[in-house]
Amino acid sequence: MLCKTFTALSVLAAATAVAATETHDGIEYEIRWEANGAAETAAIKTSYEKAAAEEAYTRIQSAVNSETNTQGIGKTCLTSVESEAEPEKLYKLKECLIAEAGDDIFFDLLADDITESDAFWAKVIAESTTDRTQWIPARQYAKAYFNGNLTATAFALFEASSSADAGNLRANAEHYYKKSDIRADLSQSSNIFEGWGGVLSSFGTKRTNFTVPDFQVPTFGTDEYPSAWAIDSAFPNALQRVGEKKLVTGEAAGQTFGVLHISVRDFTDAKGSGIEIYSAVWYAPWDKASDADKTEFSENYVRDEAHHMVVEVVNLTLEAAGLQIGVAMKSGIYKVEDPELIHRKFSRESQHHVEGYGWML
Image (cartoon, helix red, strand yellow):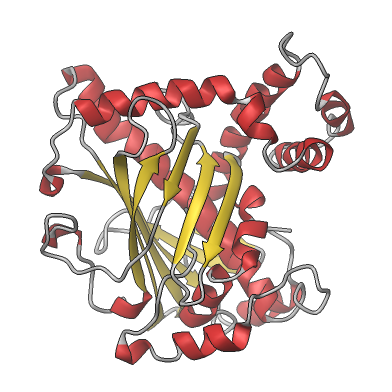
């Protein structure tokens, strides 16, 4: 389960005092929105995750109690979590619903949301330039001071395993489904259903059914990946991946509404050592929208997703660290797919031969 209290990590991390923004399970995190920007002075993860969970719970509760739910799916689940506090209340509700009705349950319960999201993104695509040098980012940089308890390669190894999909439901309040196909050469595709945008933006959450068909080591300076998208060379190119986010249904099915860019690196600074994770989605800018919609989209909606990413980074890095010290691995809860093969693949970083691996989506 995500966000466990890993005592071993907490004790080891406490040996090095770190003046960072927020602490989770004994690990200090420092969040920035720009590479050289100032660290955020207010904690993000806990309050944002709680707000997103409250909204998601209310939406699922409404769907379960709807007259269209003639089989009464999930009603006992609602009762079973009533005494819980958020976000645990929401996470347990999602798990209960899947246990009762299967992994696909949210495609049925939230079908209207997918239809609404498809229409929203079709409009954004139709009213946006195709010149990706004009696209706008939702992005964050997160330093996590694990002080030797989690490395960049180890985190990439975690994300190349079935553990990443297994932990997806608790990685974020608005995660509903993720299934990845890790091929023999470690290239990967993922089918995803998740939402974002309902905490800070007046547009509300867009629960979107999309696919990331492929990841690849980026070559910047092309029409697909403009030079402006490149990040500091301290992030090894072998540990960078980009992939287009494509709609699955609706009038714009198969079209790209955003491009995902993820990377991780090891770092050491005056406060300690750890990993830094960069995550971004470059969005079609909706530049032909009304001034009000364009401003709301470019300022608040993408900011909403950047906060969403912070929650994912914290939850998934804590999960990966727990696996690395063997807490969940030894219990047999999670299975890494051919770890020796994956390790050998990642050990050739300097040759840039690392193929696709799963990342936060």
